[in-house]
Structures are given as C-alpha cells and as structure tokens.
Length: 258
Image 1 (cartoon, helix red, strand yellow):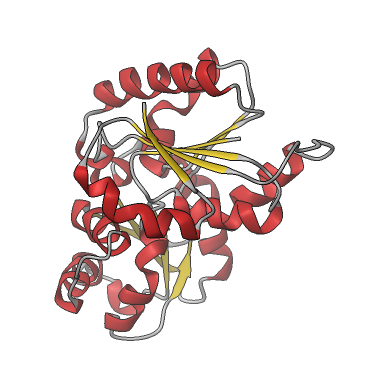
Image 2: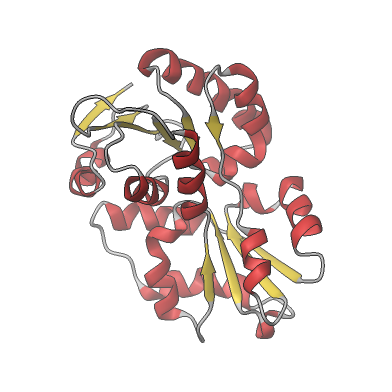
C-alpha cells in the first residue's frame, strides 16, 4: 500500500495501520518538495496532489492509497479519486467521534490554516456537532514542531503552549473538553501538548479509524514476502538524514528520492 503525506505526519497513521496489518508492505511518501501543505492555496494543492499521486501509483502499483493528510483530503480528495484506479482512503478531521464524547459540548479543532477554513469542516460540524460550540485554530508552527521532534531536534514547552493558547484564548474555551487533532502531524506531539495544557482534555484523531478502514479493504489480500517499508521523498534534503532513526522505528528501512 501507499501512504502519502506532505511530511512525516502520516507516520502517526502508519503506526495504526501497522498494528492491524503488520505484514503489509508499505511505501510511505513524504512530499517534502511541497511541504508545508497548510500554507498552500486550494488551487496549488488541487493541482499538485492528484498529479503527484498519479505518478506514485504508476511507479509503485499499490493495492490502495492512504492520503494521511487532512489538508490534502479536505481540498483534493475528490480529484484524486477521479484520476486513480485504486481504492483511496482519506483522512478527515475527527469531528464526529469528538462530538460523541464531549460532555461540555464545546470542541476544539486544531489543524493547519488550510484545513480549519475549509467548507468540508463546516459540513462535518453541521452533520455531527450541530449542538456543539466548535472552536478552530490553524497552526503551521505545530507542523514544524512535529517535524523537528522526529528529526531529534529540540522543541520547547513554550512553543507548544503558544499553539494551544491560540485555541484556548477564544470565547467559550473555558468549557472546552475535547480537542480534535485535525492534522496527522499533531498526534506525534500529543504528549507535549498535554503536558502544557492547563487541564486534561480528550484528544481525538483519525488514525485508528483510518486503520480500520484500510484493514477492511485489505481483507483477503495475501501479502507476499517479508514485511517491508520504503520511504520516498520528493526532494533531496539533508534534513532527511536526521529522520533515519524515526523512519526505521516505523518499519521504513529504505529511503529514496523520487
């Protein structure tokens, strides 16, 4: 299977998939040549993502594609499905499960700037959280912090606190009890966010639900050979070297540039 993200955030989804399908060979593609997606325009991503995934599917011939990126999916999922001839599993903000568990009926959606402004999120709120106050905050900084963490570079509590303050300083946030991590990078730094939070929150993401869907679609598939993992980057970058240890921990033992 092919797992795709703008960077290393999709590793949080890959970890859940590995738990359910430990024998599946995986190609993980990080589009570091287009990173970060959260600051791109809708037009840029609508053009880039389907074209790049078309090239990747042609080269690697996967059983299915997982777009492990909320931003790419809220903007370009329908275009991708229109051009690919394999099943495509998308990632959407986990508003539905968050609304199901919130007691206070105040939910936070923490995503990229591009994700939180999408009509796709408006529709999720209207369908599944109509009786909730839903606060949103977009953060490009948290994406960078997650990437730095996986490269083994230092991050500080103050940086995480500043991101959370963007959500918790909004009117009504004093009653907030559940936060949707609406970017696949963000579960990678959930512990750091929880450590600086002023009180306990329910932290909700889409990883486990995506893994269930992938496992369902792969029922009956017989994986050949030993489990293997290939990490593909779209741009040669010296920072990739610092990701080697993290990539190995997710079962990605080879690294190439597209």
